[in-house]
Image 1 (spheres, rainbow, N blue to C red):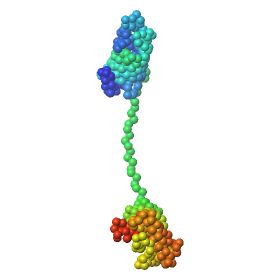
Image 2: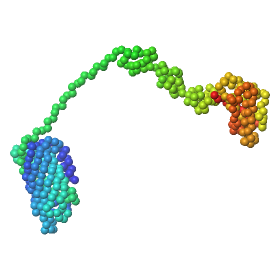
Image 3: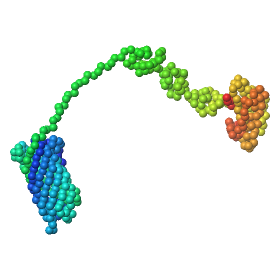
Image 4: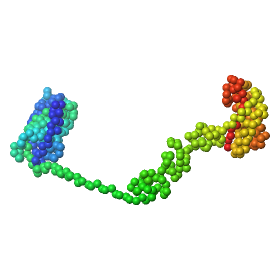
Length: 395
């Protein structure tokens, strides 16, 4: 681990480039087996071929090392070992002729006689070295490398010396193009547009609605006014004073969702069934006839004929309207009997309307028995109010 940290620290140092293209380096040295290799220390000799490059590293190196007749521990066996590898090298100047370098790379180890778990295998290696320039045509090199095999993690420590012979054309440093200063580009002057093509009083430069119809009032942006802010411009707004926040149709008029003639914001009964006549609150128009009956009775007292005449007069003034007569009772008696009695009371009022010349086809009846009280059935007065007939109008 300490060796790896040292290597990575060196890789971040200053660049040192060689001044020739190629170099060849014969080497000789030794190998110290580490781990569970079961091999003796060995002599190694080899040859390196380097190509100098102008990059983040300085050289790509191809190499071969050879160790002959390497003995296995505690055995009469031996093997020849050939190692092929490729490294990338980074150099760091120390003095005028002396430089330090680091290397890292991959290789392959071939054994002529595999034994004791030692097999042909790839390996990873890294190392450090010193290079001394004797003359322009000759240098000395000393190196230590640590190689870790992919097979079982066995590893070797190499120490070698070599003499470097450079040749080939000098490597030219990478040319760095000078950074050109940006030429200031003058800002274009705004184009002045004159005129008012749609004659709305706003010049073309500022007119966001350039095709406003002639004669309409516009705002500062040249767009037609919407005085009540309902989304419909004034020239198309049939209801120019719509209250703020209400929903409108394409004509700018407030919606009447149940189509009863009363707009939604004023409609207290927003789901009135179609066809019912409603009052100003949007609720079904009901005339409480105040025609009340004695207990267990369907006869109409003469004093209530004035109220029945009011219904007849309304229908004569509104010939398109029809009336529904709804009979009701108090809770005295059985529910079944009260339902029958309520129909009898509605029929009695219907006969009275017919006597007042109202067409029978415009009259219908319903009986609700004791189901729709308007007062408490626990008191005499409340029961009297519940014995009644109501009139509802429809178209």
